[in-house]
Amino acid sequence: MYNNCMTATNHALTGAAIALAVQQPLLAAPLAFFSHFLLDIIPHFGGTPIYEFGHKYFLYIMAGDALITINAITLICFLSPSLAAVIILCALCAVLPDIILFTYYTSGKPNTWFHKTHLKIQWYEHPPGAIVELSYAILMSTVIGILLWRTQWT
Image (tube, rainbow, N blue to C red; front, side, top):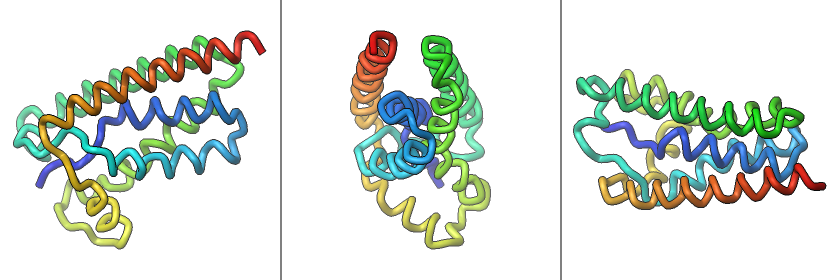
């Protein structure tokens, strides 16, 4: 059973970009949540034994992704403190579907329509997907930089 997910970093960066663009929590939070599924449709990294729950490197990979995610969101909040609450909310909402899948990752049994649907939309998880993920991270970092610059000057 492989961990079929785009990195939390890319999901959280998307949530942060939505927060910066929309700036209204009641609209931005659901958009961030649904952005998760759009990103999971895109080819991404996965499908290797080290991404298997229980592999000796699995927790290191997840911890590294979490550390990068937390640092990125902290930096964005530092650069836009007036929107920090919305940024954090949207980053969490964008990662939430993978948190909900925790029961699948630990048991290996998709037990709800949510689990089954979430796993089914992820049609391409292979090592070359890392190129897509890296490219997307660069794109989102650029978008966030532009949105941060815009919020400073408007």
